[in-house]
Length: 215
Image (cartoon, rainbow, N blue to C red; front, side, top):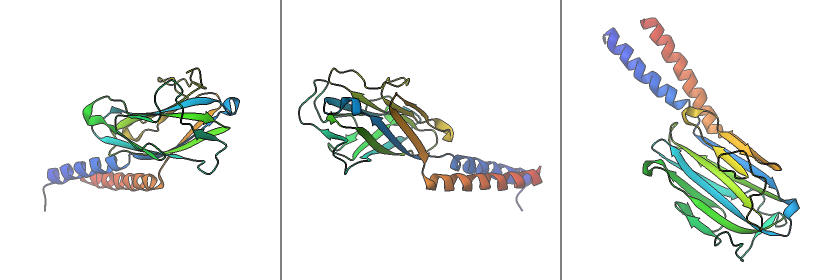
């Protein structure tokens, strides 16, 4: 039989492991921007996904929510004067949808950016799947829509001033979202993350009961 102090120390390690599993790591972000006031005009979409803390690599996969609705917007060949299009900078994979971003916190702050020239339609809608390796590694995603005079369409109150901004927070805390007028953003944890959190909570409860008996 192991000594009481050893068993309590072992339970402490188990409790820490259980607590780490309660953190929600994967998220699905969906956002829409009403661009009907700019329909038929040219502009630019600027997507960024940048590391903000921790030591792991956070990834994001950006896809179109309305791939079969060409009236919503189209990628134009002509440059808008803001930057070449498409123009990937940093850890960005792909020049057409879907795009993959990697925010590597091990290398410190950095910029991962993609710009696309657009001809606006009625609504711009996209989905972003975010995967984090742990509960401490964080990143910021934002989407800025520019009109043909290089002004941000519907700027939000986020630190970037972009149309949409989502800040991933450490410790499994819910992300912080900002959206400008005529824009909306929704963040939901993956179902598997809910299951992991439930398992972690049950594990914490079981370990604490056992520790109480040893006290």
